[in-house]
Length: 473
Ligand SMILES: Nc1ncnc2c1ncn2[C@@H]1O[C@H](COP(=O)(O)OP(=O)(O)OP(=O)(O)O)[C@@H](O)[C@H]1O
Ligand SMILES: [Mg+2]
View (tube, rainbow, N blue to C red):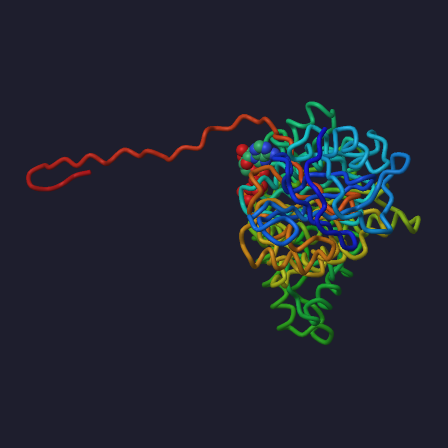
């Protein structure tokens, strides 16, 4: 193939290319001598070297050369005036696989503008991921592909599904992979699905902070009540009943009353969620299984409590495993949170944010990977977002969101974030720990589920009938 351009300046790992070929665009992988680079920005300009007429110039980041199928970093800049070639399919395959065998990598789509698959390194799952884009850009389709790929490599996945869309998306993908899908609904029994229940019997006094705010006195009063019930298989109603006739010398009457009021309100809000025994979290984490927690029917407060409880139990189970304690979670896992700004938002004071922060900072040590998905990146807590070492960015227009992404992800080129508005539905830029090159532009695989065509509703105009001087509709 002929030359697609010429290097007109070269400094460090950045080169400018005078573009001669139509095929060169954002994300294209090019070869200069034995080195490879990726186009990160394009623009028209004129100067002494390229003549006075405006010409198309591409800025590329040179990321290395191939040595025995592996990418090796470059130690000197490429030579100016060298010819630039588009990398062919075979080269793309070697670069994107990064030395990994195909069966050790995962892929959610193909390299934009090429037939080669965009391979990712699944072993980096525990350095956490973020899928960020405006609404309707294709986040859920992207995460469904990602989840399915991880599960088919045996990694158990737990998904908190805020809109109840994952059973359909993932079942479609599971037809090919054979991965099991188990759905738990929250606060809404549904045929064929199990119900997610929280075991009151197993909760310690401090665990109630997942569900309500108790002051120190109320917490210690609750501890006292739970001690009284110890050994019995009690319900929340039993706890409420036992809040009366407490020893006034130990628990102030007003504290007991306030605690009782809180617990009564809790049993109303969490009706159908609290149970005597509840869902065994250690049993929902299984290889080749995707467990979906469909929280679409639950109010926001209940969803947050479920995420808080679940996050804590997952981490606790993995810590037990590492320390050879009873009731561990035996398998490493991926924890996926849709609409993450609702649980890990910077302004949220619910315990779910602190539990997610814990998984983001400690999860890796215990084999838990976190994947946060959001259309409001600027609302997500910095501590959570900055721990996500792989970013999957899709169409984003909001300048505040772009700014937040630039601040949270050091590795990503600023120019690329500025160009995110140019991405179409289903297109994404993946950068960070799971890719070996500065970034990869990917067209995510479409999931062919039956959809009703979007149409504007057409309502009938009410007929007005006049009867003896009065209008009737
Ligand atoms: N990879 C893709 N290829 C083709 N079409 C896609 C792709 N991904 C998504 N779409 C289309 O875009 C629509 C929206 O996708 P999706 O629900 O994943 O977006 P989203 O970003 O999760 O939206 P929301 O913010 O509402 O959750 C889908 O119904 C589908 O028609
Ligand atoms: Mg979505």
